[in-house]
Image (tube, rainbow, N blue to C red):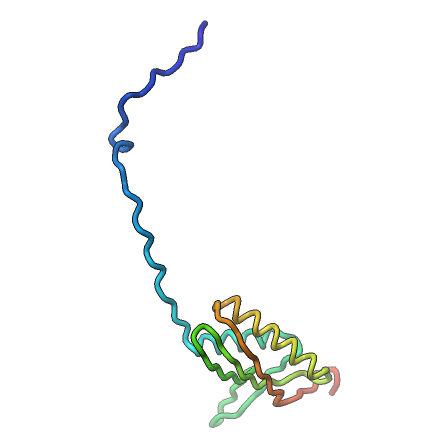
Length: 133
């Protein structure tokens, strides 16, 4: 038995005959990130660090718990951040602030694509850990 070969195709099906010119690539557009979104990313990043502690403030009978006050200053695709945080005591304040600073910078860059130029941290409070009390 000899192997048979399929005859060569001389005509293409209608689908194969249709030629579609590649479209010019659409421009990707613009994405704007509101300052409040950056603030939320920063607060979440601060909360992710074990050396930070929630702060409570009474506002007209309501208690507002937050991990950081955040100020965002934008210059194009770059931001400068000012944070006010509470740290759990005992802690080496300078080292803890540096770990928070690095983590905030990494998270903001990863989640927003913005360049973080500078992160100022003010340690507003040291809160004793439960085991120290």
